[in-house]
Length: 150
Image (cartoon, rainbow, N blue to C red):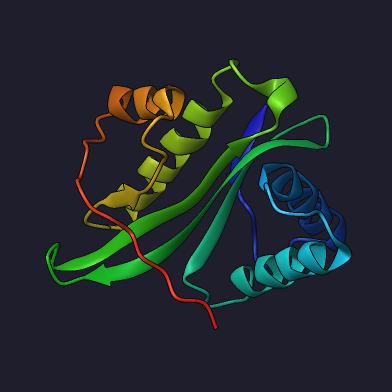
């Protein structure tokens, strides 16, 4: 299995594999519009100079899992940090340590880039991912996340 950051010049086939995997994660209706929205987001995140990155775990040309994150600037941290938007492994490939390998890749990348930390959000009752994050040194931050959509 190979874990790597998707390059800016990723071909359409890889972008579609990433979108296909993300469609499995979504709980809303799987429509063509939703799929196209994902592809648009993937394409934007892969543009040169983008502050978004995608890391995939791939085996035999199959994308098994991925992480999608953005680089932000934190006043509290005094510099750049990584906001992990998504960490997802295909349900047929779980419990093989894939999420951990992806997350370790993201951690090493962030450290090498001089980022000040990594933050993320997971469900309160998601004990599996909470265990993974805690096992790698992540700690709980109590907060309530809000959103606004146009």
